[in-house]
Structure formats: structure tokens, C-alpha cells
View 1 (cartoon, rainbow over the protein chains, first blue to last red):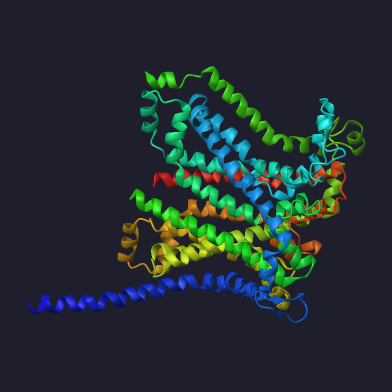
View 2: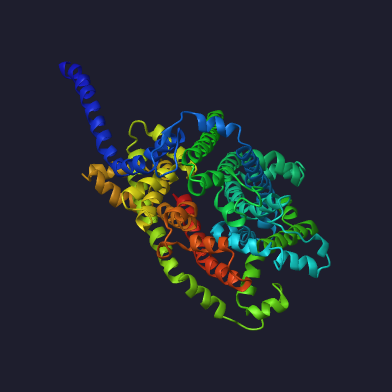
Length: 315
Length: 280
């Protein structure tokens, strides 16, 4: 009796101690990364916010100006124009590739994979995915040269097949440069949604499709009512990752157009870089970078919330 | 009966196959055009344009380009930087994921959210402070600075991914090891790491390729010629618009070859990683 009475308190006092020790010794494994995270990500992030509240050329002493950079930003036509170009890139890097990727994934998985063998499907998938593994510096060189006005491959081809009147200065004409960039972005990007969706389709229960086929559902109906709802989690992940990537775009613009001609393809990340390193208006560049970060953080949080709700609805 | 009719190769299915093959060819077209033009002499190019087939294998363009930009040196830099980042970031990801996924320490959900946010942040928001500080401490324009920065960035993602993988690690195995008197470090090194090796392999390959393809931070941090990586060297050359058409092709071809090699390795590792994962 005394034993059973004294037993619970003993375990009660012992358990927390063991747990706390557990906590401490496991936390040790986080120390190296923790130090690195604080030094490379957290402190620079806070410093950047600090810089954005000053006017500074990067050499002398920064002068505190409060929120002036941000108020200037909201009335800066260059910034808003670059922001519109960013939306064009979201369409070209997230929305169109996700839509095409969805149809391609369903076609490769459902038709090609089943009727011509999985090998055929995986070879086709590899070809479409290839631009994704290439450093864009390399792909960009190729495209800039193919799209060159004088002897670029595209204009030469148009001339050869008798469509010479369609020749353009693809990346140099302010009216069409942004559309050209969008086209190149679609080429770069469609492989990514494709492989994610095809992986997602692997876990869809085949009996769903079989039941729909027996009921006489057309390919299109099966695509719309089974494929899309079943891989919705992948669809959200792809849209988030691609949208964030589109908003952060720098290298593609730097290599293809340098933001030109006349700012026709300039995006916020490029504008921020220009302010940091070309115009040495560090405070203004930092403000642009901060706003850009805010947008990506809000998008990510909205996405996480939504995903959380979906998971809870499933459970 | 129904499955037999479904799998029949109807004319519609053939039409789809043909259109997908056409699409695949369009995707590959830029690669083909480079390969064709990298082996032409400049004279041949100006006479017949970009679309004719080369008369012979002219390798001088490739050699000239290689020497002019010291391509070997750039390759070495890229390998050193990407390799170091991949090794270090995998090690850090494992340590973190051990504490978060298996140790389940308090606040792990908030830590994961912070890591995910850090990973989605644009690098522009870090670049100027890092540039400023690295100049102050004498690390500017060194490969080490880039290695440290990318180790931090990649391991943030690796921790996020690996923690969720390790949180479903079979508890019985850990219990059994603990019963045998194995310490925490021993369990990590002797049990967790060997069992999750396929996933670690995938992470290593991803980190390597991502770091290899990075452009923005290396462009800013590696300004001197002898420190530059392959993408930065090619990007800067392209920006100067000093290359003729055949040299452009040569540069692109040399830039593509490592990427194709990674691609093949990547295909293998990824397939292996997935099959081992599904076998568990």
C-alpha cells in the first residue's frame, strides 16, 4: 500500500528531470547550425532592415531618415513598373508551367505510360526536365544568341522558311522583350511541375480511375474530377515554390536583358541590386529588398495556413 | 476485359505520343543548336549561318575558349565550392534533424517554420550586410565566404526536409539501441545515418547542383578572376557581349557538359532514394 502510494510521486518527479535532460542534450546538436543561422541569416536580415531606414552610399556614415525610403518607394514609377514585370514572371514561371505541367503529367502518366510503357514516359519526362538542371547562365547564353537580331538562329530560321517579315529584335525591342523573356521562362520552368505532378500521380489509387472508366467517364472528366483533386497538395507546393522563385528572379534578367531595353524587363530584385551596387543608394536598395521579402513571407504563411487546414480537413 | 480495351494504342494515343515527342524535341532544340555550332569554324558559320551542319570537327574554338577564360580553374572553383557546401550542409542538416525529428525538442514547430521562411527569403535581403561584413573581416572575394553562406542557406532547407523524414524513423530500433546502452551520438552515427543514407544521398546531390547553379551571391562575392565559378564566368562574359557566335556555342557546350553529368547522377540517386524509401 505504501509502495503504491509512494510510487506515483517518484515517477512524477523523475520523468520531468529525464525529459529536461533529453531536451538539453538534443539541443546541443542544434548549436553549430544555430550559430551559423544567427550570423548568416538573422543578423544580416535585421541589419538590412536597419539600412533601409537610412540614406547611405555604403562608404561614409549612414544617416537615419526613418521611413522615407518606403514612402519614396510607393511613389516610384520604376518600382511599380518592375513590380508589374514581376507579375508577368509569376504568370510565366508559375501559372502557365503549372497548367501545362498538369496536362503533360496526366498525359504521360495516364496514356503514354500505360500504353507505350513507362520507359517511353520517363525518357520524354527527362527531355522536358533537362532545362531545369542547367545553370541559367548557360541557358541564357544560348537563348540570347538564338534570339539575337542579326544572325540569331530564330531570325535566320524565319528568313529561311520565308517568314522574314516576322523577324524581330526579340530581346532588344521594348514592346516585345518582356514577352520574349516570358517565353524563355516557360521553357526553363515546365519540367519542375511535371516531375512533381508525376511523382504525385504515383500515389493516386488506380481503382479510382478504373471505376471512372467503367462508368464511362471521358479522359477529360477523369482529369478534372480525379487527377486534379487528388494531386492538389502537389499543385499548391508547386505554385508556392514557383511563385516565390518568380518574385525573386534576378539571374535570368541579368543574363538575358540586364533589365533593358530602357527598363522594359526590370524586376524588383534587379532594381534592388542596381541600387546597392550601381547607384550605391544602399538604403533604397535595402528598402526594396525588405518589401520583396515581406511579399514572399506573406505568401509562404498564407500557403502554410491553407495546407494546415487541408490536412486537418483530411484527418 | 475493360483493362484490355483501355490499354489499346488508339490513333488518338499515337497522336498524343507524336505531339509529346515534338515537344521534347523543341525542349532539346537549343542543346542541338549549340552542339552543331560549337564544332564549326568561324568562317563556316558566317558562310552558312547557324543552322547548317558542321563540315568537320573543329575543336579550336573550344580550345581557345577554354584557355581564354581558364575554364579548368573555374571548374575547380565550382567543384570545391559546391562539394564543400554539399558535405557541410548535409552534416548540419543531419545534426539538426536528429534534434528536431528524433529528439522532438520543444519549439521544434516554430524552428521549422523559421527555417522554411529563411529559405523562401530573397537573397537580396541578406546580400548587402553580408558584403559589408565580409569586407570588414577580410573574407570578401574568397571562396570560403561563399561556402559559409551557402552552407547556412542550404542546411536551412535540408533541416526542414530531413526533420520530417526522421520524425517517422522507426522508434523500436532507437529503443533497442538505447537498451543496449548506446549513447546518443553513437545512435546517430551507427543507426540513424546508415539507415537514412539514401535520403542523405539525395540531399547531397541536390545541394551540389543548387550551389553549382547559384549566380547572384557568387557574382557579388567572387569578383576576381581566379575565384569565379563556371556560371559567373559565363554570365559575365555574356554580359560583355564580346564573344562571336562559335565561341558562344563553345562556352555554352562546356557549361552544359557538367550539368548533363549531374543530371545522369541525379536521375540514378533520385530513383534509388525513392525506391529504398518506399521499401521501408
